[in-house]
Length: 354
Image (cartoon, rainbow, N blue to C red; front, side, top):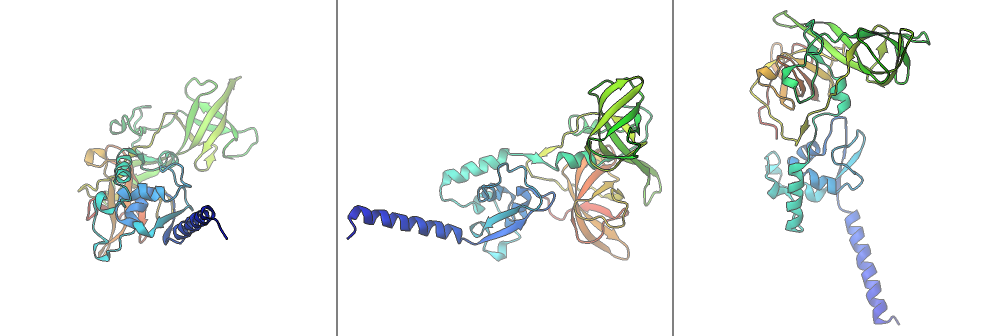
């Protein structure tokens, strides 16, 4: 016969197993992440409340840093977080109405953390490689005043030299390839240059005016040595194919703008005038360029709906501004229900994005 102490131990173990089993059988909804996803965005989509992102983070202890999640991850969303009242599923709920409260102190801490944590609108790789529309002004190094203190991009012709050739004789290069540079300024070991691609002229679909050229950064070259008149460099980063004859631009720091996840949708209308892909279809996570900029009332992070105008006006997607110049902007396609192409218009979303 078991002694009282042994009986208590057995009961405690049983209760522990029951607790674990209950926790493991709790219903969850799985969300597979795609490029551009954030916990804030997942909370907005799945729970209709972006302020619930700390609760999702807490339910996924394998996520060490809430600012960084990656495509293909499975995010578990406990059923206890999901709003059961279907009649209210489209309403924007206040944080205090959606947080679980096993202890009030926990809810307060979560709200406080949500208020102070910020993350990039897009990651650094994308903000560098997305590019911008530049007027070809023959003054090197002028920074667009709208970007001062932010992700400063040049507003001029980025031409301080070229990728010349390589010892291998190849004409296409990638990371770790060694190339020779022709530079128009004194260079020394350790200097870095952007390797850029400049598109053909961008013509406005309606006015037929020449807007400028799309400038995209293909990679970064770092000088290894300058000897006997040769400037030898290594490709240390490659965002796209780098070719012999590609133009160099002076290296400067590009940092993505940080956000707490609250985005505007200002009452600004305009047109998509170019796309990063030379195909007829632009889909989610592709880049497009707009004919409105920061002097027209646009800011980085702003979101707009896109519309195709033919016999009828049809909403076909959602875009978000990731770089803003005086009168042009770069945007990422966040949602695409149909092809988004130059000539489509953009306008304020029906509801302000929060």
